[in-house]
Length: 69
Image (cartoon, rainbow, N blue to C red; front, top):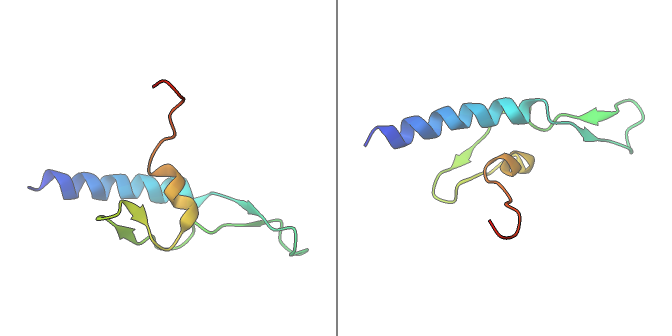
């Protein structure tokens, strides 16, 4: 009963670390070359298994497998 939420909290920390330095190019802003959207608090929806406020962090939640696997 305690292992599930503990594991989820640890994986959420990994998700925060991976999304922290994720850069998105900003061609419309001449003063800045990149945006860093992951540098904010992440809100986790455990029922739907996704981050609700930073969409780019959701790419690290699951893996896309090759065909046949």
